[in-house]
Length: 348
Image 1: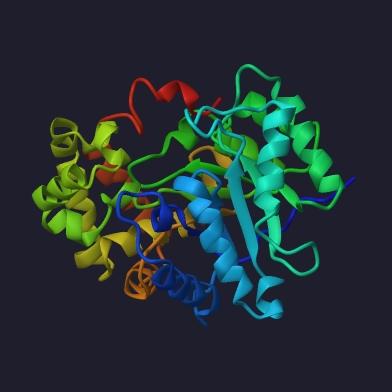
Image 2: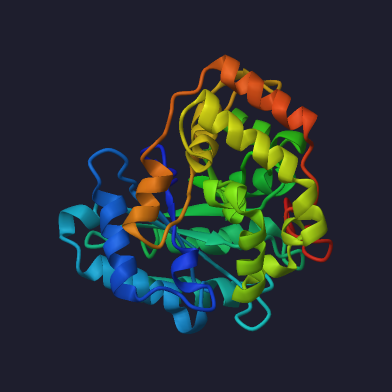
């Protein structure tokens, strides 16, 4: 039986914003950023997270192909690329059928060189398809691992039952779930505890809560909301970006900003990432004996943004963790991660 792919380092890097927004940056700029983040001497990451549906006409796959093609072979062999797929291209609903999984994996693999000449490839069905038994879907993916078309399996937005079904069929390399100071549901619903028991790493997406947990937002929240309204991106339909809910969360945002700058002398984005790194593998935290490894995957369209996110990480103490807990108890977070219509697709 194959083994799970080992995920190295403290960070991964998300590439969704490079291709899936109304006005994505040019490929040349994104490739320069990817080169920077994968080769930086201090915080280089070897895990890149992408998606078959991250933009029109396989835009994300085309970007990653260009990046891989221009890399020296020795760098590519160090990289792990996890690609979400298995969705209906028009509706973006998950489709875990054999036909869908086969189409998706073969399409993803077609953008990369054969095994031995390419990065390690993980395939990740983006959500759980309730119409197909999850163990069958994982079995279809495993066939492609066994054939060497891909190297491993990642999961996304699973609950405990689906995780157990997947583990019964194939080794799981990692599980992608949302985690940030503003989104801590993984502690409440038991999925992080289950991952910790099985020692499967968690990939923490939206670690800055889609841009809320940044200095610029804390310093000018009105401008942040206005830019979202003008951009037309997906945040316009999410709960926490609606004016009423957003304003309810400003006290928490300002308190965390103050703690970052006055106590830890760093930025809010760096505090937010430092918090996840501190929680990763922490012992006896929130009732979990030892938390599994957690890798946040912030994104950034420029080298400057990457440096801003990664460059000021601080070592948090147990006392810092407790102070952050107190801030969030005093200022509970309002609003759903997505919205009422999409909430049923999460933690399935």
